Image 1 (spheres, rainbow over the protein chains, first blue to last red):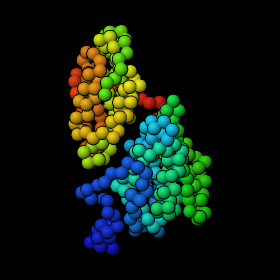
Image 2 (cartoon, chains in turn green, purple; image 1 turned 90 degrees about the vertical axis):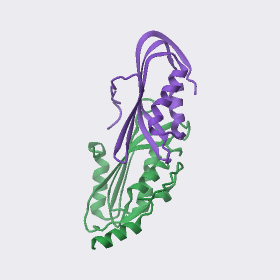
Image 3 (cartoon, chains in turn brown, cyan; image 1 turned 60 degrees about the vertical axis):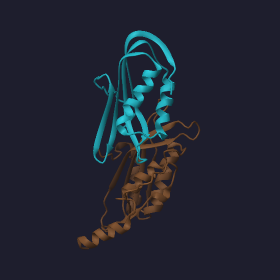
Image 4 (cartoon, rainbow over the protein chains, first blue to last red; image 1 turned 90 degrees about the horizontal axis):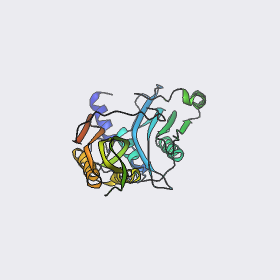
Length: 165
Length: 119
């Protein structure tokens, strides 16, 4: 694909990136997520997305919760566009969710969106009442190679959260 | 917002830090930041629960980023008597640019690690 075609393809794929009038939503909205095509699907490679500014509300007390989300995945055909991911994560701002539910919800939304080869979401939430909660979501498609990765990552979760500093 | 007063000894140097500031930029984009407050007591400080509620209340308020330290300074100075009150706010980067906004007396910011948090 020449650079002109590549540019046109990328421009058509995503609508929010580069938009001069970004609308921010503060209630959970998975329709904000957009994808672009992976042009290297024959390769296995990691994509890490660190989201340091995640915040939602406790569904019981309405107290704000804060945390870092780490999303690692091996793309298949579709990849999540990072601005749409930012807007999607901001949409949790006034949503009441437990930490464990947030991480699973985001993991499931991203799996439904991209159908990746492998995906994990790790939530490192700030402590409340001296306890910090770090849930982790793991998914792989049906290929044994990625099932093996899922099993390994599940068993070794605390050894390396794969944060890129 | 008025913060309730709590009587304490005079001349204590008090520092407060919160990494849990959120407010909205004019564009609607949430801004994240860390607040540092520093002063010498004149016999009173503010109720911490009130201060937490105040910080939380900024979550759906819109400010110019440059005005956020003044806003917090103003609420504290209207609620309690202090000496050498200073407020600093470190905002996370937007468009590759980080901002630190200060209002009032200058003071060295000392980061206190949150031992529970993986950074």
